[in-house]
Length: 130
Image (cartoon, rainbow, N blue to C red; front, side, top):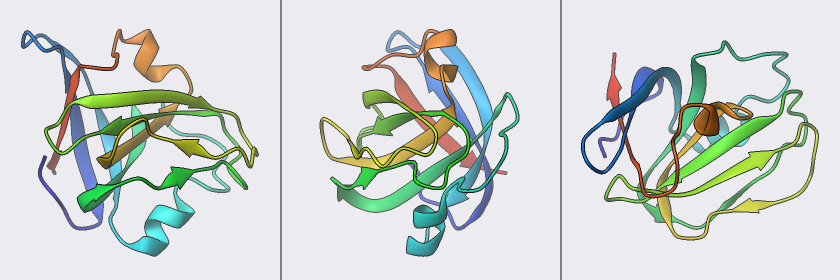
């Protein structure tokens, strides 16, 4: 996957056979502070909006929903662009969410967004700067 500076981008999702499943507008979070804040204290995300956290090298960190007012889904993406884990996260929860494998991208969207579009573990994700 590409890396990018902070700002806006587009995320695309693909089935392994090449079928495009969806795309969405994503807000990049590349600095430690942006990744830590994420969508905290927001009352909503648009139906086709989300946030993408980006690392140069694979990591195994966790996510939680403290001070996040809306329930989210998160997809973890390995350095080869394959989605390795998708989890549902409840608003205001301090439960830690760890990926099953190291990842370079974590894509947050409204809860249920990935499943409602048929996006599953094993599909691919990539993003592009606008």
